[in-house]
Length: 184
Length: 444
Image 1 (cartoon, helix red, strand yellow):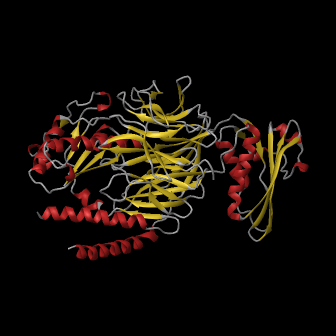
Image 2 (tube, rainbow over the protein chains, first blue to last red; image 1 turned 45 degrees about the horizontal axis):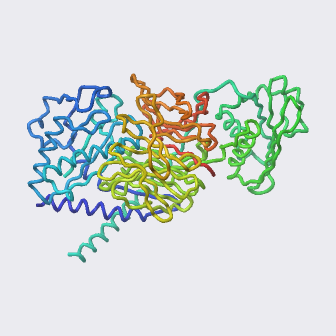
Image 3 (tube, each protein chain N blue to C red; image 1 turned 90 degrees about the horizontal axis):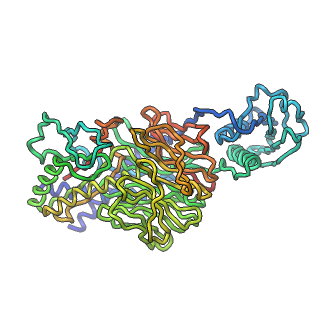
């Protein structure tokens, strides 16, 4: 229950700051600051690694290999990030397992709010990637709803390619950036 | 409960305002550095003589350098080096035409800048045809020191028009986004406007950890529409900002994230992308009334709308065939027609002022990555102009003679201005951080 109030406070902060940010202005230039990001980013688990295939030329839905040493392997709830193939919003079998586990947890804990953040790698245009992140977040949202999470408890947001986890310019970096973060 | 919340909310706002005010003075607007990386030794040979200075001290700016850089960047001129000049006339009456035929100049620019009073200058120039031995055009300007760069661009525009028959676009502005990482790991975004050559950069928006993208100029140059986020928990929205006053507002509240704004040629409508239930489609918003019309309805990604110059059609990117390609639809909606058929992916297209060419991001496959292509809808042909792997956000200059786009140079994002034939390239970069998302205004 404590967690519920924390989330409410974070959401409330976001709304408050939004109102403030929109009105601030100084001599032709406008300043906007997102003070909630620090809080939300520390919750993100980035240790889960998807590696292997160069999905550029593979068909959507191909199985990606998961690092077997990952300590979170046995507990899908410990994984807060699911990864996607290039230009795809289809969930891999591993991602499906993680998403379903979170869906079951959330549907049995009504009142909890969840934010699904969709992201893309840097290939392709920024606007296309914003749409792709939207579609990825929505793919996770649809499974959540199908498994009984209240639609009102889910918010989706896409950052496209604007918030990469890895700054590299190869498949190992791109595979970490094509993701949905499950934040609650 | 409600009243307690209100007091709490007020305290938070005050705290936040204080923190922001404290942070402000440390942030300097990032200035661009400019270098020409690839010269073209073709085009009309032109001699531009350094302008004669008549005043105290040094002249405020070198008009000749600004004009020469403009003309060179266009790819239409070969600038002859002043060290080859046999004489330094400043007016048509002083010109010995044979001095210029000897160094194979076809046209000659001469001029002077006279200090008439405190912060008051008079600039005059003539453009001369060396073989016909006559003045093609001569003009005089009055200006303050701060206006002299603009005078130089207006002279470049006039020379460009006399020599090509195409309206010059040097006296215009560009918008772009910079991103710098702070010591604390925050992403600092600035929305900037500058002269078309990257000078006189001015910050108009500064955000921390909230991405800014897709700036779009209103046709009259007064407004910028762009995509940003109001906080870390809401989706993207399209904002409108008056660039002279800094006043800004979300263009509307949509049932989902909104992005990819594009002004209609008459400045009355904005085409944009709205994501409803995670699926993006193209809409047209009437800016004055707030009326919203839906143009596409498809479960695929539809985004990046851009108007035809006559305002009758929009092109957009869709992955309805599996991979992103360029499609066209009437501004009233209806049947959607696929335009691009070659290339693995094509996206982010926009028209030139004639409506006969589109500039876009193209991926030809086989690991080629993303380059800038010019696509001719009538023939279906695409000319690939660049050789990067992550070239993006191309925009035609308002006269269609140049293309500005974003690419990576090492680990930095930079802008490149390229003549439409691809021969001459100029790089605009920051000493520290990324430059991206260029947009070229149609007017000053």
